[in-house]
Image 1 (cartoon, rainbow, N blue to C red):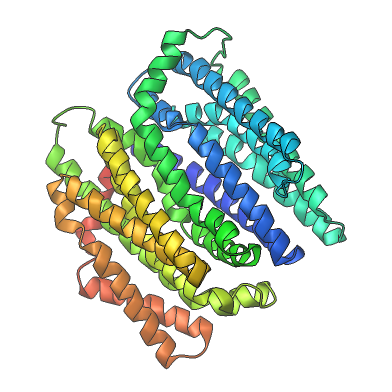
Image 2 (spheres, rainbow, N blue to C red):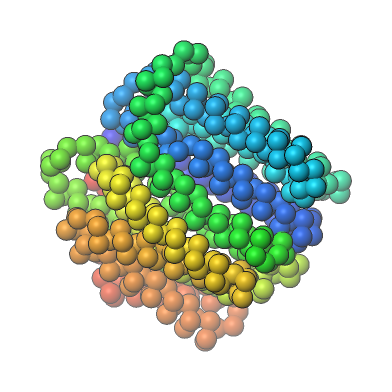
Length: 474
């Protein structure tokens, strides 16, 4: 089991690295090659589409992973799940077509064209989630990187030739997304060999819909929180404000790579831990989970520290002074969110594995309402910085609600690390920047100081490193 855990982690790490690097390359090419107004319009359209298709999944994607981890046959799940994405995806795209013909003066035509590509990605999701649930992470690697590799390669080639246009970007996006659907379908048919039958009983479909309803609410609010600020900036501010904020937020998302690596691996393992009302060796397992949480806080705080020190000199250099200094306060606020993002994902996974879907639903509903209220108040006055502040307040409150509702003794004794580790990172960054002007030297000193203070405060102890190895046996 330890060997398999490391193999899963390696495959998932490679997948996330490739996707994040390609995604960042795509974002970089578009941000440099197009004006802020066009770049903002592209990001606004993608925010609408990604939010819509995430909502249309109704949480069935995560439920599929959980069911397979519990031992449910994938042959029974795949046809039902694929029917759902086929019905909801086609309905949504037909709605976009009707919008286009009924309101020909509608200025956001990118929605229609980019939506075709995202529809293909949506159709590929059942095959990818099935592979995730089966813990075939090497196969999932191939399914998940196809679109980003094709898109980044073609964008770089045409940008190098200087012939990149908005129409060509649309074609490239559609080609990449369609390639991912075809590859996922073929790999499922030839490698997994899970049949995709055309006959699905109404009872099976409505049963899985009913079971996913609490999680569907969570997905709706999670999707809205993830991109609601982008959508509001495009409506309440301007495409330029959205372009600046979306660039900072994209880098913030890429900086969350360690979380993206570990998160999919935790769902099946947490499910196995809590599938019994009183799991065997629960005290030892809870202790390991608490240590894992502490390590996530250390990693997230370190990433936030590095991000703030490098932001202005590096980003202004590579974007020709377009997105660096103008976003310095925005990225500081977003980086302060990073420990909460890690913590909320950890606690969501834990409670999802325990089946506490209604509790999760109400927490995400509260988070969504706080985010909406803050965006409406702050964005018109402060633009991107207001959106970042609203996001911070929302996810900080989400952590507070999760922490008081999660009844695990070992975790409750360790959750103070979400304050200590970021504080240590903040102190390390302030001291290094105050005494050292050269960026590389300041970065080097700040990292050394960060780990020194972690050891002094006993946030890092040798025993923890030994305990965390037991996660591979779960």
